[in-house]
Image 1 (tube, helix red, strand yellow):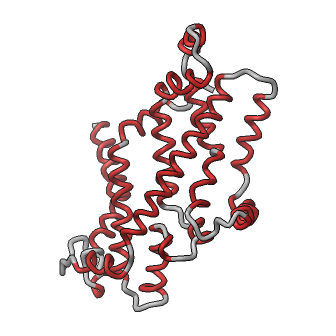
Image 2 (cartoon, rainbow, N blue to C red):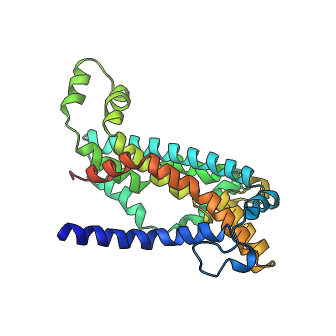
Image 3 (spheres, rainbow, N blue to C red):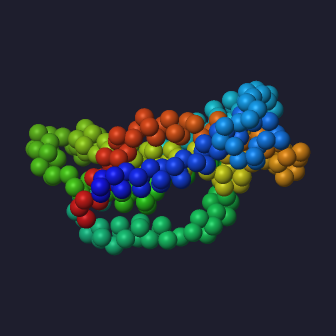
Length: 272
């Protein structure tokens, strides 16, 4: 009986979480007059919206820009955060605790505090209007990912690392050949988290991008909303269709990396 109640509760929660996407998917196959009729099965089923959105907007270019920014951002923050986390977890040096606390303290700074100074830096470098500011900031790591990876590194036994050092391995070889393979689930979790954050990021594209040829998908959706929504003729079916096209890759990515994702979440933070 208890198991039945648990499964029933999980089923209800799953329906609640899945309903918005199912509604969005259904709306993308409806003509304009039926978008908000709240039918999950369209009364009039049409593929015209998917044809129109590719004709009215450079979706392929926006997807390409987004894929480039997202992959570069995810790789940059994963590599740099892993390096810093490994330093805090493995090496013993004076001031390690206070310095790590200072790194964590940066998470308390709201993004709005550093938004203008960061923009001024990129503007002085002549990078405003390009895709570089959208991913290059991740070359300096992330306090959240550093904390997450450090907790995983702390859960690893030190014996394999000490044995490798006795065999003549240097610090870089120990990190790349032993530590990184052992923390693959945490690396995947970090990569997926940042991939999702970069894929859905709208704030930075709104700040740095000017030309539609450099738009990412979220920035392009904002342009479509301005054109076909509030400032246009209320073609919500176009906006819904574009939203579906941009959401599907994230769903596919999650299912591909689900095993590593669940394992990484379950094992991270087991040691402080």
